[in-house]
Amino acid sequence: MSHMGYDRLMTLDREQVLRSAAALLTRKSTATMDEVAKAAGIGRATLHRHFAGRDALVKALENLGLQEFEAALDAARLDEGTSEEGLRRLIAAVEPSAGLMSFLVNENQLFEGDEVNEGWNRADARVSAFFRRGQERGEFRIDLTPAWLTEALYGLVGTGAWSIQAGRVAAQDFQYMIVELLLGGARRSVEQ
Amino acid sequence: MSHMGYDRLMTLDREQVLRSAAALLTRKSTATMDEVAKAAGIGRATLHRHFAGRDALVKALENLGLQEFEAALDAARLDEGTSEEGLRRLIAAVEPSAGLMSFLVNENQLFEGDEVNEGWNRADARVSAFFRRGQERGEFRIDLTPAWLTEALYGLVGTGAWSIQAGRVAAQDFQYMIVELLLGGARRSVEQ
DNA sequence: CCCATGTGAGACATTTACGTCTCATCGAAG
DNA sequence: CTTCGATGAGACGTAAATGTCTCACATGGG
Image 1 (cartoon, rainbow over the protein chains, first blue to last red):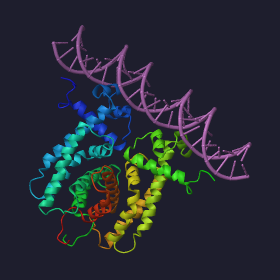
Image 2: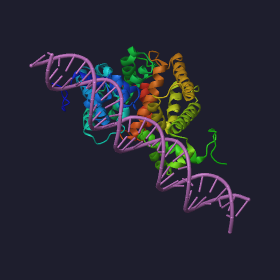
Image 3: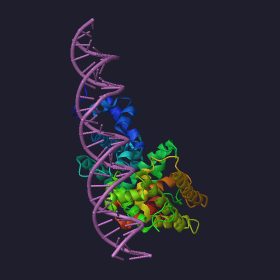
Image 4: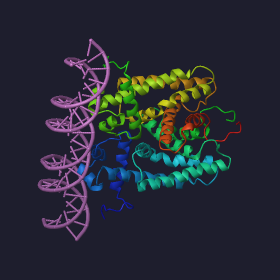
């Protein structure tokens, strides 16, 4: 077997290339195909053999990110236990993909009407439904819309990933920082 | 008088060009100089007369954003009243510049070691000091570092601006969404 | 009325990244 | 050993954006 058009099965090579591309593009979203290739330790020609062009590469990254995020949603088992427990599991499951998600969150500005977007709409719906469920259970406040909480979750994950990457916060605090801020906010409450 | 090198005084023309450039680049960070010019309703040549090149344009935007953010910090009078009141004033004061800040937050990834960065370090220090002061007063929880709260504030402002721009949340909710999430989080607390 | 300044339109050369191609090499399977 | 396939290096041609330049126009002041 070798590399083929289908993207369901992907060789380890292809996956590793995507990994390093994600790591690079997270830091420098305008990186050249040549830089991407060098970062992956392969030649530019080989990169083009794997991905028809830059668009194809970005689309592959979107698919990978979406795939990982949906896997995280599955792994988080959002409907088990309290909403807080579900959220903690989700952030924990998402942490390995945070860098990639950070890139995609900032990049998705450009894309519209793609079929990829449909996939993200599904994921968004799952997150949004999770927050709504939490509201209905009385575990989440109802004056913040599920849509906003969803966006805020993405934003905080991206910010967290970038802050760690920039060395401004400690990597080990990723989950705690995000979950605690998202759940409890900065205000010091009596019940704590 | 005409346009001159100094940037402290700037003609209304220059300022308006920067405004529209910010509005465009917030939506499409890779917009062409030609697109920026057309968005500003001027010719590409004129744009180049005002700003030596794309780098100069971006740097001018950074200066404008920094200037506006520092003005917002001043206007917020962070040391008056409770920390919560200060934060509310800051978010309110920052709202008009949220789009520009959203652009800069995502763009600043690239720049390092500039003199602009020094300006942002000053601003960061002010925000961070504000959170630290709130902690010392017992108004903010101490298990979230001032550095992280600062980053989260930037991230949430950017996310809020983008979410509104994308039509996913209502513009009128900007301040409330950010302040309430940043302060109180999503958890429904007994005391409310 | 005339002139000076700023402007828009567009031509032009340059740069840069892209995408394609060729060719020599390396490695593994037969 | 031989052969087939994938790779790296690099040489192209191409497309797009940039930055500079010229020129005609228009507007406003002297």
